[in-house]
View 1 (tube, rainbow, N blue to C red):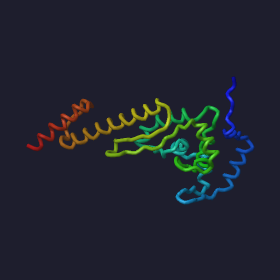
View 2: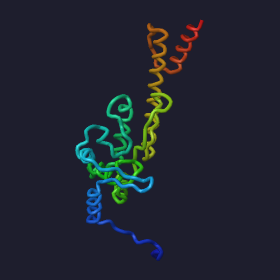
View 3: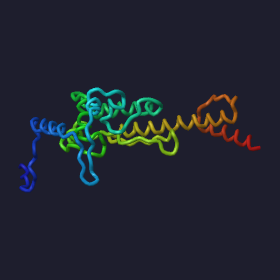
View 4: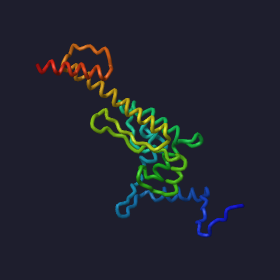
Length: 209
């Protein structure tokens, strides 16, 4: 037996291609940002069009994922595999990356918290399956990397592995730097953290005497 539909259920509205194109048309026409109370959207600029079709670097190419990603340096090297993994999960094979950047600008107002056009925002979320790079930052030390992403478990595990590896390598470099400062002639033959910590403690005790 077929389950009887509730008479109180709201009818599902189908978004036709014509309606979607009209949404895009009016979104582009109303380029000026709007504000209501504490909620506001930004003014669209020519640089947004360039960002969509001609991204200038790695950061802009994958900008639709959310967080601003560095284009060079140690942090870039650390986050690079995570960004590629997020992009692989978020972008279907049939969808060009420029279209996701387009939805990021005209649907999400080039933000992870604002919405410029609700239907385009929903379309963006549907295509990307909710995959998002929320934020990254270093907290107590330059190597204390914290990453926040939305996505499948393997993406969360990858982010955690990157955090752990970045901290470990940064801490080892700090220990070696302190050892070299106390003993410029010191030769580093092992990168085991416990061995390096013991060697540093021995040097500090020796200098205190």
